[in-house]
Length: 233
Picture 1 (cartoon, rainbow, N blue to C red):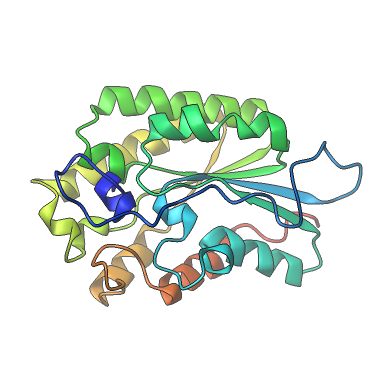
Picture 2: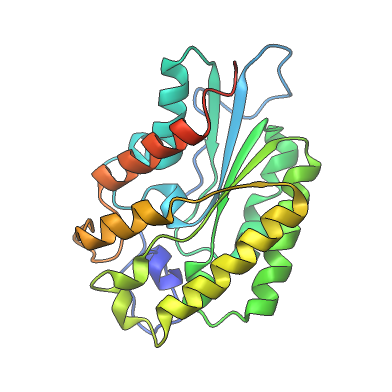
């Protein structure tokens, strides 16, 4: 997913599908601002290409964080979204490049997903745990509600299958670390793995052979909005 993230990313594999020149999205409607004194939901999305929305026709509106924010708005919430997700990012890169946005954006809710690019780039599970813990420590210390998501089944995609051996087992091991650290820090793990399996069974991949379709992202947002009802109420 580094390749994954460039393709789910840009990766350690010599030639991976070119990344979509990712840039972190700024908050909708302007630059960052201080914590509001109203009930605005300030939503910061941390992660790789799956948070960025690679595969959606328009990442600004079709990424799952944008779709989730729209569902909350439909329930009457004022939502300011900052999607920091960048294709190809490992947990360490999320920590160094995205986590600093917690201080500047002052979110009330954070989602975090990363791991595929760590696997593809040969990051050890010990280093992954260390970086995930640091991300979640910073996120929960901010006072925001923190939602943690597992990897999807990228390793079953046409391109994902070429990224190494024992990928399902590695994904399970890395996800176990993510879940353990979420529980240890008081973050909330929302298990969408059954949905990911269904989407892989139905080959819901875009032309790059590794990223989810727009319909897949829509389903993620629908399931998340059910698990996390409008947070302004």
